[in-house]
Length: 214
Image (cartoon, rainbow, N blue to C red; front, top):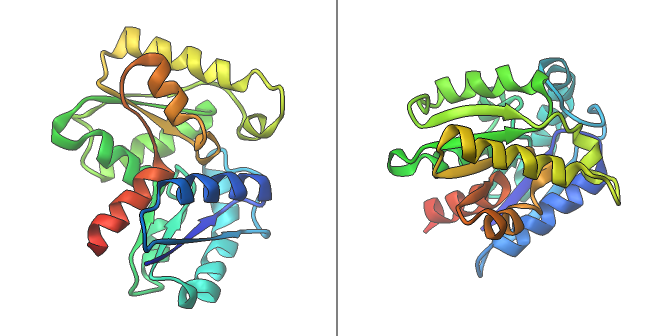
């Protein structure tokens, strides 16, 4: 199958990171395509950025849906997800929903570690819409700006790690969900470091679509 990952923001380096993580997770017979919403904001941090990203995101879906068998919105806020689904008969999933459903499978408790506090209400609303309130212990902000994750030599990763440690100490969660597509390359190293599942929505989206296709 062909899966198109659309980055709703305009930062091409993040699109490349997302595509690399998706390709590493994809099984035989799955091709990963990617697109950047160059009409969007540089990052999506809260509802205002999400609203600004939607027109370009939806236009990209209309333009590119013929290239793919399924589409993934690669922003943890699941920006424009319902409107996107109305545009096509093909499966459209968001990395936020994919990761949180995987983390909460079987009622496992999980915490979400995202970037800035402005994103927390958006994610909390999605938790309720997806019926995962009982499983989600807390949505936590590391106060790391999205684009700091793209900066070589940044302390952003260690700041995120500190918030994961706090989640484990305070929330008693059985899994951690990384609440930003810009963290797509961190899941494996954090899982090894903390000794429990650390889930990234990019990988979870690939696995969910492959399972549906199989």
